Length: 475
Ligand SMILES: *Cc1c(COP(=O)(O)O)cnc(C)c1O
Image 1 (cartoon, rainbow, N blue to C red):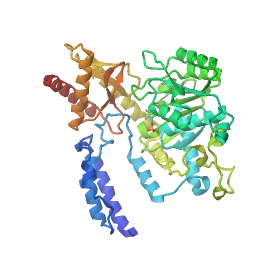
Image 2: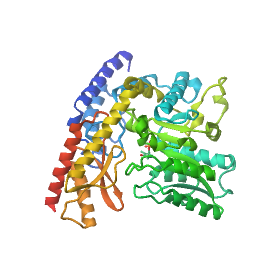
Image 3: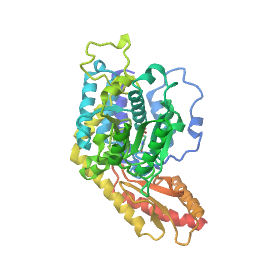
Image 4: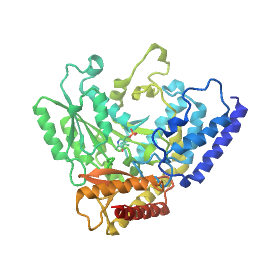
């Protein structure tokens, strides 16, 4: 393809995208296709000869779009969001245009230095300690793995990197029973063994019980095991429960244990000074992660990982083959050495576009609006005699269920709510997902789409109440 052709199709594609956002609410939020349906429409083998862009774009519309779940639809309330925005989209277009590989400073100095400054901005915007360092990673899961590997190396004086894990003591990792599955995955990948991940009990708010953690650490020390790392959650995936960071940080300091704080979703709320209590004591911790790609209007992937001791981080990951030696080494940041992948996309650009385009106050306004809408939704649940809230709301996630007054059997309530969820999602008007709280099937209403407004959550509530009545009638 030549540039004049590219120009033409790029205009078409931009028009397509703008139309898409103008009409996004007309699409069923959750894709309605059946398993295998898309696969069956795709030829079994690659084309021998090049095809026209018309034909490719045509098939995009016909085959691909029906199999898309529309994450940017303001009626999407499932999981946690991967919200986006036009400023971020523009930056992603430029990133794709530049197509740089930003593994080290030399491979694009602007990418490295913009990344450094964006991490500095985010530190200040979220109230993280000024002397920590930040790096952009692809996901919170990888950041947590990075933290565990760094903790492992620092604890072993870099001997595991040198000799492997075979002879050392058993390292123990702790998180609450509500922590994200990426903690377990990281423990497995880091070679620590799943049986060395201890899930600590939670209190009535589903936050980690610090006394139970200390008892476990003492018991482990007694057995000659080596406490390595605590992964605390600020905003668990199930219910956005907040582990008590200050108490955990003091405990970790006392026992020389690395404290990693996973605020993948909730970290964005730290842009509001009134939510900084969530990380009180953070200066005693060792690392912190949050995802601008979840709730901060920045396209996936963009994870901000911050660490107190960047020297240990770099010492854990650095490699220096001959073909990557540069004269700038030591004077600049080579982010290849700040995590697992060597190759890196230019991800700082979209953050720069988002933060400058919204401004701090613009971001704060949107986030406050989402929190207000969540409070509204929670009050509707509260006021309805056949619905109930199942945990106290901390942020913009409402955990609730359908509970018709005449039904008392927990098993029947679970079946009813599962059926309700499936029926809601299969008609495509809104999309929400579930968790379980103390065995109770719980619907999760997340209110954090970039363009979500009161009318969307009113529609969601109407849909939920109506579908509830229908499901009850079906028996
Ligand atoms: C979403 C989430 C993760 C995983 O984030 P990725 O960026 O998808 O790896 C980790 N922890 C928590 C608490 C999350 O909500």
